[in-house]
Structure formats: structure tokens, C-alpha cells
Length: 451
Image (cartoon, rainbow, N blue to C red; front, side, top):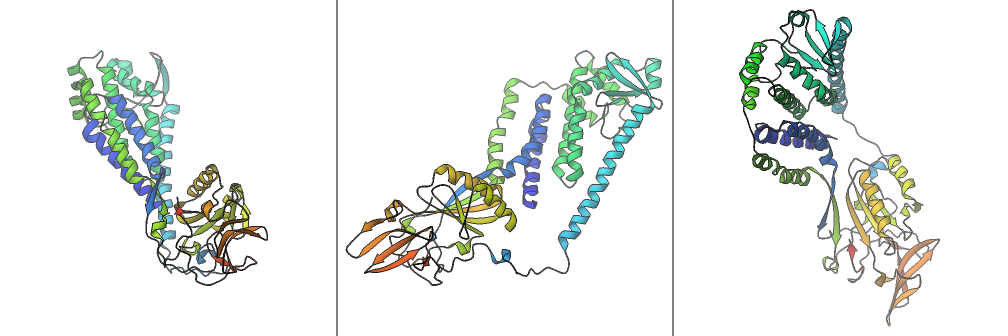
């Protein structure tokens, strides 16, 4: 979770900085609004996009051992877990919940304050909009479908039409929902600097949109003077008000005109930027491939003991683990019960007759449960998987498969001596029981490992 949040923060910061220095100064305000809202969503999606990276590496010299254990010792029954005297995670969680509660209470109090203003004051309909007449002197502001104005200004006729158009634009464009969306995220992600920067940029963009609507029917100089007259009055949280954001920036943007060519020249760099963010911050899943050329004569084959989880897949798509067969749905429950660590490694031994759809479904299931590295072992039919009878013959050697107690095993017969192997390549007895010993395979066995 910490890595995900860190990547999300980096992603949103990069996108917000791009907006600040490239997009914000151009007269393309509605695009900027969509961009900022989409940036928040994208920053949470990119870190969970899985990208599979095939990595070819040399096989380490690891002795084959008993296959009775297929998950780490930390998961076996009776294992003692040492804990530190000072539980940092517990204290950090308490601090997080405490601050989250404070932020939540502040959010609710702000909503209650606005609700009281709506409930306790006079409501009238003016040009199709709902106005709340405030008894005190206040700067006009809006929230959801309500526009709040000073009662004295409205009744005395000093409530300027330009101010009404400005606040009506906030209502029509539903700007309050943008702010509420970010405020709700900040309740739980109060430590996220990107959200604060995005909220500030989004509020400024809202003002640019409202200013543009006003200037269609109001002289520029008159509107600028009107803004300056409200600059010293404090605005209310969660609302959209006339003096929101930097007035000097808004006056500068009012005079700005952006050509179509300039707009495209600013927007097109987003394509390589998004591609770079996906490549850099996405969820990497390694799949190692081992070729026959990497299997030297005296190399050992990496066994399931080096993985957090080892399974085999039958031709029918059934998953076998600890001498038990499962469907995909059943095995998902097994993973949850074992409580594997957040990012675990997996070895899959695949029957060559297994349909690619079964393998793809199982890989997807494993990734959904946190698998970060999946190694796949396949055995070609040339070493005996195409039939349950003898498949290779020489003067002194036979190879094939044999069924023992309902399970399929490989065998190699040399000089009238037969050795059996399980689907992981480990030696077993003629009854299918593991032999805790170190063996070496012939240089041509298996023909290829990995995919």
C-alpha cells in the first residue's frame, strides 16, 4: 500500500506541475478542468496497471530437495513470529486515524455551517436561480444550487448583474461537486500534497470559466474594478466565491487569447508524458524464461523451495498444490487462507496440453492476489508428455510418463534401472514418494524451461 500511495503521489505531482507550467496560462479552461479531474483518477490507476517483463537470467546452482513444503516456513503451522517491543505500525495507524478524524470533523462542520445559512435565511428565486439573502455583509458565493448574497446589497440595488452571472456560472457548471470530490479524498489522504495542489489549480480554473462567462456581456475594465472591490473579503470553505484565487492572475488571463495551434502544441506532449508515467510507475510483474543453452551440464534446476508458492496445471486446467487438485475458484480461497505476503513469487509447472486460456486465467488470478513474479516451467512432448506410454527408445534408454496412484510421473530407464520424477523434476520412489537427495539431470532434460 505504501508503494502504491507513493507512486500515486508522484504521478499526480507530475501531472499537476505540467498543468501549472504548460496548460494553466492558456485560454483552454474547460479542457484544464477535465484534465485536473482526470489526473486525480489516473494517478490512482497507473500504479495498478500490470506490465509483464520477461527476464532471461542464468539458473543459479541450487540443490534439489524434498518437495513436501511449497510455501515459506513463515506460513507453516507452529512457526513462531518475533515481534519488536515497539510496534511502529500500530502507533502510525493511531496517528493516521486521529488526524483523519479531525479532518473529517472539520469537513462535516463546514457542511453544517453552509446548511445553517440555507435553513436560517430568506430564500428567493431570481432569474431562475435560488438566492439566499444573508443579513451580514458578505462577498457573493455559491454552493451546489444556491447563490448567497448580502440582503442589503440585493434590496438596495447594488447587487451587480456581473456578480450574479459569475455565481450562476459556478452553479450551472456544477463546480461545487469538483471541490467536494477532492475534499472527500483529503479526509483519508490528508498527507497527499498532490491533492492540495490540484484543488488550488481547480479552483482557479473554475474562476477562469466564470470570468469568461461574465466578459461576454460585461466590459473588461468594469469587471476588473468589481473584482478588486471584493479582494479584501474572506471567502467561505467549500464554496465558490467571486474573490477566489489570485485576482492578478485572473485579470492577466482575461486578456489572453490562445490559437488552435498553440492549444495542440500544449496538449500533444501529454501523450509521451502519460506513456512515461505508465512505464515508470506501473505494476511490474516479472516472468523469467530459461533456455536450454543456459542449462549447463552440472547446473541444477531451481526448485519450488525458492518460491513463495509452487503449483502445477493439468491439461484440464486444474491446479495441483500439496498433492491436492483445485479449480481456480477453489484455489483463490486457499490463497486467502494461507495469507501469503503482499507481494509473493510463484512457480507454475504446465502440462504442454494445457490450453493457453487456462494458463492466462490462472496467471491473472495470481496477479490479482499479489503475485509479482511468475516463473513458468513447461515440458515438451519430446520428453514423453504426448502419451502415457513409452515415447522414446534408444538401445539403452527409455523415457515416458507413468501414472502412480492417480498422479502422473516422468521416468527414465537406463540399463534396466528406472528413475521416476515428479512434475517439478524431483526424484521420487516407484510409489511416488519424494526422495530427499540431490540429483543431476542429463544435459538434454528438459529441452526447454520457461515461456
